[in-house]
Amino acid sequence: MSGAHPEPSAVSSGGSASNAGSRAAKAVAELKSRDRDIMLLTHTSAILGWDQETYLPAKGIDERSAQLALLHGLIHERTIAPENQSLLDAAGAPIGPGAAAGSSTDDAGAADGDPSLPPLDRAFLRRYRRRYERAVKLPQELVVTLAEKTSRAQAVWVEAREADDFPRFAPHLQGLLDLLLEVADRIGYDEHPYDALLDQYEPFMKTSSVDRIFTGLREQLVPIVAAIAEAPQVDASILERAFPVAAQERFGRTVMDALGYSRNRGRLDVSAHPFTTTLGFDDVRITTRYNERFFNSAIFGTMHEVGHGLYELGFADDLRGTLLAEGTSLGIHESQSRMWENMVGRSRPFWRHFYPILRSHFPDALLDVDAERFYRAVNRVAPSLIRVEADEVTYALHVILRFELEKELVSRTLSVKDLPEAWRAKSRELLGVEPSNDRDGVLQDIHWSMGGIGYFPTYALGNLYAAAFMQRINRDLPTLWNEIAEGNCSSLLSWLRTHIHRHGSARTAEELCIEITGAPLSAKPFVDYVWEKYRDIYGLD
Ligand code: ZN
Image (cartoon, rainbow, N blue to C red):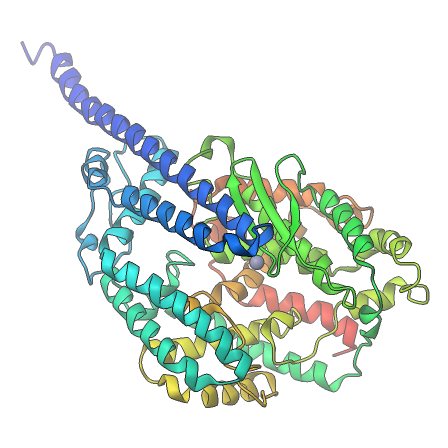
C-alpha cells in the first residue's frame, strides 16, 4: 500500500514540517507581542528623556530620574524574561552555546529561525535573540553597579574638566574600565575584548576590521591634512558676525522642509546638546542650539540631526512597532547625518540654491559676501584640539586618536594615569597640535565618563559609509547635483529610503555596505571624496 500510495507518507512528513512551522509562527507572534510592549516602554522612556533635555523645570529632575529608572527596570525585566528562551526554541532560533558567559557572540553559525518563516521574521528573530542573549549574560548587580558608577563618574568628570584636574577623574575612569572589562568578558569575544564593547554600538564589526580601515585612513589622510596646512588659509571670519537667532531659526526650518523632514511626524526644539530621539514610529524629534556669533552651529547641527531623523522616519511600514524599526548600527546612522550635513550641506550645488535665500535672512552680515566666499568659509580645514569643532577632514583623526588609546586601555598596555601624556603624544602625531591643558585634551569628551568606550569609532565609520554610498548614488542619480542646485533634494531621499532606511535593522551594516557598494567598507571612497573636494578649495596638486 505504501508503495502504491506514496502520498500519505509525504503528507505526514509535510504535516510534521508544517507543525513545526506553525509552532514557529505562533512563537514568533508571541515574541512580537512581547517586543511591542518593550518598544512601547522604550518610546515612553524616550518621551521622558526628550522632555528632560528640552522643557523640564530644574526642580523636576529628581522625580524624573526615578520615573526613568522605573521604566528602565521594566524594560530590562521584559527583555530577560525566561519565557523568551522557550519561545526562541519553538521559533527555531534556540539560544546557542554562545549564550554561555565568556564565549563568542558571533551569530554566524546560529539558526535564524525555522526555515518556513518569512525572511523578515527570521531577521526579527536574529535581532531579538541577540538582544536577549546579551542582556542575560550581564548579571543585574553588574548592570546596577555600572549605572551607579557612571552617574557618579559623570558628575566628577564635569568638575574635573572645569578644574582641569585629570587626577580627580582618573580613579573613576579606572573603576569604569574594570567594570567594562568584566562586561566584555561576560558578553564574550573572539579576538579582542574591545570587540565586545564596540559591538554594542556597531553590531558585528570587529576591532581588527576597524584597525584595517583606520590604518588606511590614517596613512592617506595625514598627508592631505599636512598639505592643506601649508596652503593659504581660507577666511572664515564672516561666520562669526552677528546672525540673529530668530532668522537662524526661520532659515533652519526652510532647510529642514527642503530636506524632506516632515513636521507632521517630528518637531524641532532647542537643547544644550543637539540630538535626535524616536518617541514612536511617527514621532521622531530633533533639537538644535543657536549661537548668534557663530553661524555654523545651528544650521549644520540641524542638518545633521535631520539626517538622523530621516533615517528613523524611513523604516518600512511592516517594521512598525518592532525592534527592526531601528537604525542597524551607529555607524550607518552617522552616515545619514554626515551625508546631509557635509556632503550635501557643505556642497556648492546646495548653496547655489540656498545662498540667496540665506542672504535675504541676514542682509547685514552677508552684504559683502558672495556665494563662493561663503562656500569656502564653511569648508575651512584646520587641525584643532576639540573634536566637536573639527572640520570634516580632520574629524576622523580625532576619532582615530581616541580609538587607539581605548584599545590600549582595554588591552591594559596603557594605564589610566599615563593617559594625558599619551593623548598629547597622539595629538602631535596625528594632528600636529598639542593641548596645553587636559581640559582641551583627555578631559574634553563626556563619553568615557558614561562608560562609552567603543563608541567613538562609529563617528568616523559614518563618514566612510557616507562616502562609499555616495559613489553608488552618483552613478545611480546622474542629475542629482543639478536637482540639489535647484533646491530639490527629493531623489536623494528616495534613494536612501529604498536602499537603506526601509530595511531598518533587518540588514546588518556590512550587508548594506556590500549590497550597495559591492565590497566591505574601506577608507578609499572617503579619501577620494576629501581629496577631490579640498584640492579644489585649497589649490593642492
Ligand atoms: Zn550624529
